[in-house]
Length: 252
Image (cartoon, rainbow, N blue to C red):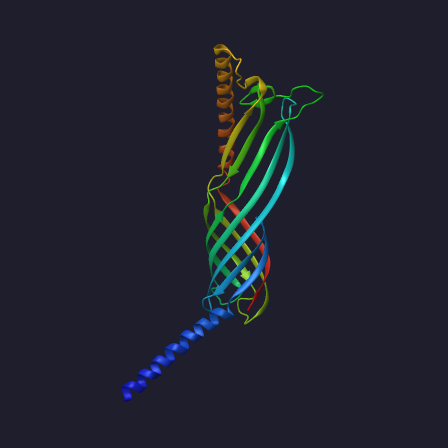
């Protein structure tokens, strides 16, 4: 009888402990909004215990028809028209060493961002303005435009520090901040050439004309490949991207 009584007390104690842990986890939940380098987003977090929390967030920012005019050393104006699409998912664990607002964070960023653009030479006074690739010039009769795309590795390890003033509260509003880095790796550039009328094949072309056009297209591609290698070398210097965010949340 005594053993049964002690067993009932033990079961009751464990049940109460589990209920208390679940209740605290529920009381430790929060949801908030933030402004980061990746745009505007929201996050949700769950407090595991007095020092640990799990957090997920999403940020996004889009902008279309960004025009940039560039004049090179030869005085040739080139127009860059870009569409910017930034999206990221942040999945981290937060460690509050002193059980206060300050935290260390570690996890990963799932990056779905890309940078699409079209390179088009400007036409001045009705004259053909040339593209210059690898010190070779081509008119708009040969190249109409070049579509470009820059993207990143989809998953990047993340480490950082931050603050969450609602962490020690039972409920209510709080302020959040993150300062960290994502080890993103090198961005990758892609391109597609839209050839001009002078290099498009048509049914009336002779064999010699077809070969000549193909040779010119191959030459353009080779020189543009060299340009892209230089661009890729420059992008290799930016393998680590900063992550900064400010926001507010509500703990319930």
